[in-house]
Length: 246
Length: 362
Image (cartoon, rainbow over all chains, first blue to last red; front, side, top):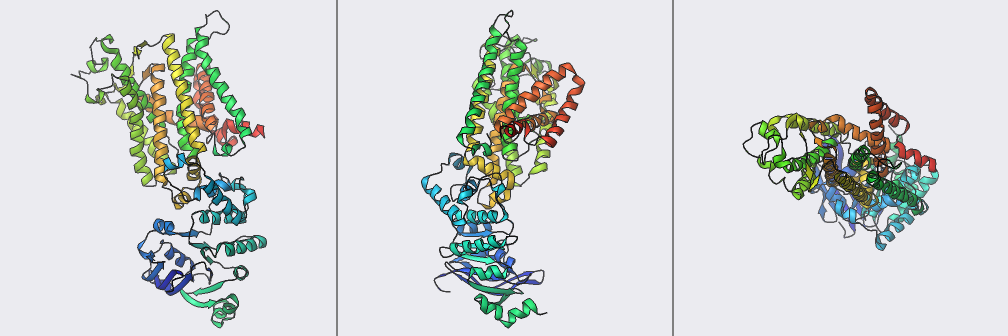
């Protein structure tokens, strides 16, 4: 484990009723790295995310975020340590504006009294504006989230994750249901976000993964089948067999 | 003011504020017009003063329900219980003030206790001869009950229709309890025949005016508190909890804590409304706990427009004006009208009367 490794999964197995959802999986993600995870259905992509975020406990193996042992922490503790997860289905608050959605996600005291007395300071406003810029929704800041398009809702959700200042962002199928243009925009957004933070993207869409232009990990039957850039894994005979053979 | 209007430009809010203060001013004139000689064209009868004063306390109750339901999504079908508890606390004070003027002439014990053979005041009646204590209890007891019930319910993540049923059962249980003579709260007769409050003889123009203005001040104050909450970040957290509670929890907010805060505040406001209601109508009995009362109050909010504070107030006034008129003009029709109103509003006016005006504005 090098000093720049932020996420470290070693020999992780998850067994549900005899079914090995993860099978001696090992994966390392560097600080500031953008990583794509692909694999057929049932390869263990979602289970892997669940293990990292504390939703599922591994049956064996080591899961570390920096020096913290994630297998010993619960979901809330892991979230506050700086791991943000975006679920497939975007849930933004329709009745609130884009700006207000980001404001709610901003790191700040969360008690009722603190919320009542909360005044939006210059620094907080600056952070929200930076994020608006980043997710490309500056022009929509004061529109209600209800009227955003599907793609814009996904970006808003990513923006809400960014407001929590995570060091590692887990993004689950961000471009499902997006138009080509939105998909392109999302790839650019994730590339921009990586660098200052690490981003792990789970995705089916190979065109999108190509646009991410990053290291790709192929999962199959709960373990790593192949790893490398997109051309490398696409030409790997083992990968071709899993995707096209059988 | 809802979270939606809060985000409108300030220009859109100014007229609303003017309308509100105009309405408060018109209401404030009512007791003054009551002082005019009866021959005057502008004279307002005693009945109007009492009935409007009563509606004002209903409007406070409606605000309380709206804060919990319209903003936070906690549909309580038992808010009448908090209102009634506030009313009972004030009623206990009024009973103590009767003193030896009761029918049995006992220096301390209220008539019903003499009748039931109480040797002395039960311990929980002590202190109610002091107004500040009674007033405090009128807010504290509903708040405490909401804290206990809310803590147990929200901690176990009881929401939606289950919470509604729970609150409904709560008010029903309290009604049955208060009907019992051995509870020491006057059984099915409750409290009545009040004589005075704060040194004023009740049923005099002065007392009517003072209670009316006290209610009006309480309504303006409650509106102000709810308005401050609705435009703060807390107000946006409430709306977010209403629409997607688990997502709010996922953002790191303790939704249990936030909902408890709102529920307790809402119960305290309902208690305040009840405490102002009882001296104006001159009676409190267990009927105030009846589930129908709580449901009716929810209908005021639905008719006026939930999720907007002005809607709660408008709903309380308009539905009760309709009730006062209809229960004299055609008493048998009232329940049908109320039910029909609720169905019609749900189907055709999901944003209530206020939504109708908002639409017209655009």
